[in-house]
Image 1 (tube, rainbow, N blue to C red):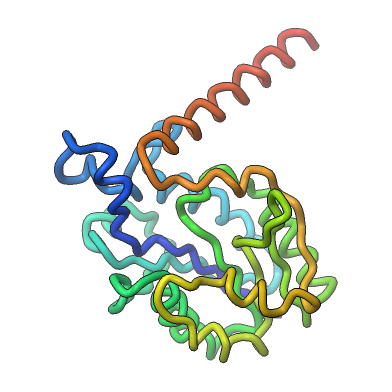
Image 2 (image 1 turned 180 degrees about the horizontal axis):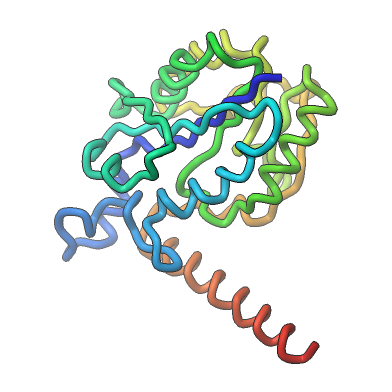
Length: 220
């Protein structure tokens, strides 16, 4: 297996901008919103980087579009950037461009979303392990009986990924191939940051989790 990772972070985040009307400049860029003292994009990258230690996992790509130069300046040096030319036409176009960029060097692609901040490294590793065990199957995430990203697609599905357009992302293919995948449950995948309220919910979730960990360490 030659797995490459694509973290999609190309959108303009209009709903986020509209929810923080008093912010200007970087303050209204969703990918740079602060979570646990880090920009969202950095926080998401750090969850994926440990996968690069696995044999066969090659490169972590971040696909950028809106505010590309500002966001790129905040990325770790070891991250490769895919510049989406058609990000404004929707996630489908962005994903198709991204897969086109890496398809010649991949047997599988792991597609992740930057605004799913609570998806853990452990879940990504579980997806990867399942893909290694079943390399011909799509390995998706299940949450509240829905199939979604993050997901791993084998090479034979690349032509279909390349045809995606508009706002239809990987979820469209998951629905079409319901009998050709395995899925791993991840309750945290439902936390998708679209607005400031979503961001605050994620921050509160992390604070509560940290408080529980501290209490557990104290009592033990």
